[in-house]
Image (cartoon, rainbow, N blue to C red; front, side):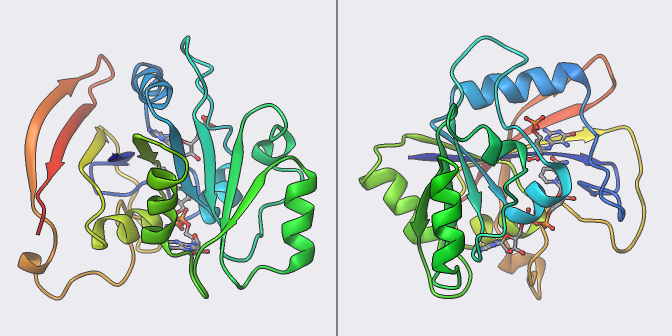
Length: 217
Ligand SMILES: NC(=O)C1=CN([C@@H]2O[C@H](COP(=O)(O)OP(=O)(O)OC[C@H]3O[C@@H](n4cnc5c(N)ncnc54)[C@H](O)[C@@H]3O)[C@@H](O)[C@H]2O)C=CC1
Ligand SMILES: Nc1nc(O)c(N)c(N[C@@H]2O[C@H](COP(=O)(O)O)[C@@H](O)[C@H]2O)n1
């Protein structure tokens, strides 16, 4: 199963401003992302991304099939009014929760038309979740679309095969702004994963799209 992380960041490495604005990619780049979604079995985001962006995670800018939408949401906090839950009857949607989720919230989400998978006791066990995707669901391509905490978990577990980052010609600043990779971080650079630049694209908006292969430890 191939796992790709895709994100857009400013030159200073932020994927959203401190107040939560994440409108970074150009339309041209968003079309590339929608093509990538259409070529994926599932698109995975963290609950904080859903709460901040209220995304649709569809392929509406291109022709193609919507991937299964997965929200990593330990406590089943996804709001009933979110675009994802409101359309769960039409686009297959999975909420990946942990033992922290209440039975009432699990039922609320199922009633909205989404599936709930329980993986882990505290945070969602990403390794177990992705293993379920591969072994029980037969998924072959997974697209992780952030945010920073989820990117950290996937990279730190050594699960990612590819990292695609759009660098937009903007600066966000702000020490509280979310960066591409959050989490606890590494003590030394050498402890972190190493990447190999495989390809670079330039958009008309002056963005650089960097395609990295992730070295296995
Ligand atoms: N520019 C871009 O390409 C993108 C920007 N964003 C931005 O990122 C921000 C949200 O990112 P973050 O705050 O870092 O949150 P996130 O979206 O990565 O969600 C993290 C949350 O997911 C839950 N979670 C449960 N199990 C987890 C696990 N094993 N690993 C990680 N998370 C787990 C926890 O509640 C955790 O706090 C938003 O402002 C959004 O706009 C998000 C995606 C893409
Ligand atoms: N590639 C990319 N560029 C940006 O500028 C972004 N803000 C994001 N964000 C991700 O896409 C989701 C929004 O998707 P919809 O447009 O609602 O389908 C957002 O939640 C992030 O996961 N990505």
